[in-house]
Each structure stands twice: as C-alpha cells, then as structure tokens.
Length: 181
Image (cartoon, rainbow, N blue to C red; front, side, top):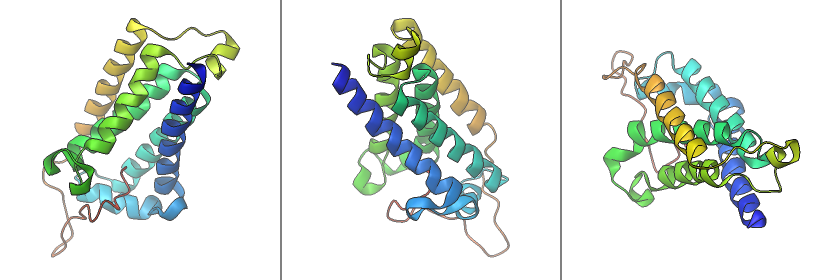
C-alpha cells in the first residue's frame, strides 16, 4: 500500500509542480508569467500577472507538498483548489472529456489529491518521518472544505465579462495548450 501511495503522490504532485513552473518560469513549454497573465486576464482575472503568479505558486507548492508527503492535507487542498478553479473557469462548459477540453483531467487530479487527505501519504513520506498523523475522515473533509474555500476566494475576484483592449478578444483555450492546467 505504501508504494502505491508513493506512486500516486509522486505522479500527481510532480505533474502539478511542473504545471506550476510552466506558469512561473515558462519551463516545459509554458507561457511564463507574461503569457499566463494574459490568459488569466482573458478569463476575467485582473491583474492577470498577479493571478498567474498565485496559480503558479499554488500548483508548484501544492504539488511539491504532495510529492514529498509533507503536510499532505494542505498540499491536497492547494491542488484541489486550483483544479476546481480551472474546472469552473475553463473546462466545465466544454463537457466532461479532455478531448473536447472538458474537465476530466482536472477532476481526476483534484480528486486524487483529496484522496491522499483521507488515506494519508503512507509510510514513505515526510509526514511519517516527522511523526505526523494527518489522515482520516476529518482531515479529508477539512481538506476538501479548504479547497472549496480557496477556490471561492479566487473565483470572487473574477470579473464576469473579461476586459480586453479595444478590438482585442480574450485569450481562449486552443487545443488544450492553456497555461492553467
């Protein structure tokens, strides 16, 4: 079981950390803060660069926390929160399947992260090494509630009608090469 949890943590955590570094630094073919900021403004998040920075930091830090299994419920909350925002702002209107730009991927990543709050990170984790026992029903529900609260805080900052420069149109999700995961 511990190897399975380690594999899950590493896969979800490092994938999200990589997405975060795309936003922050433009690594792995990402758009960096400037490109992601423009994309975020196209979604109604102003100023876009600040929102790109926050999304990148949340994805990177949440992913790293999950990957190493440190403060696992917090890492899970961060990951689930940013995935919920991505689902609502970009993917849900496109249906379920990823092939259409739907929310399938962000749902899987967010739920996989939350599962770790319920099960715990396993014995091969920083939490176990430090003697933290942060798992179970209360931790899982708390992590999910914190994720929803974090998403709501972010979503309340969104303008319903994206503001664009005169004659420009908002940046859209083209062939799922969006910088927002």
